[in-house]
Image 1 (cartoon, rainbow, N blue to C red):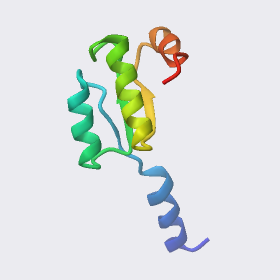
Image 2 (image 1 turned 90 degrees about the vertical axis):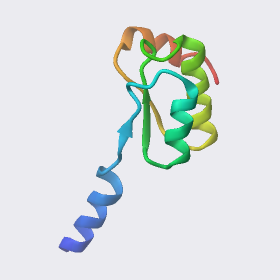
Image 3 (image 1 turned 60 degrees about the vertical axis):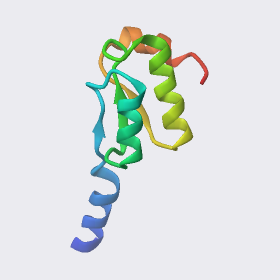
Image 4 (image 1 turned 45 degrees about the horizontal axis):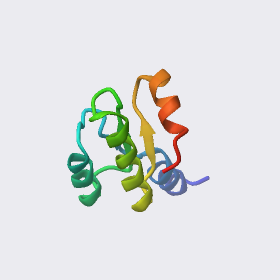
Length: 85
């Protein structure tokens, strides 16, 4: 593999920008998504406005085809992740 091909792979697949773990309401996350400043949105159910807001954020990510990841609190997030959006 040439160095150019390697650089392309690294840039395309390994340089994703996750963010959002300190957000606490849907509008904050919408702003991030609208600006295309994040590749993977992370929301923390313990910081955002609870389960309902966490699910709204998940639905917004789904609508915009942006990957969504739970941040911290795995025992809480696993239950929330089973709720269909």
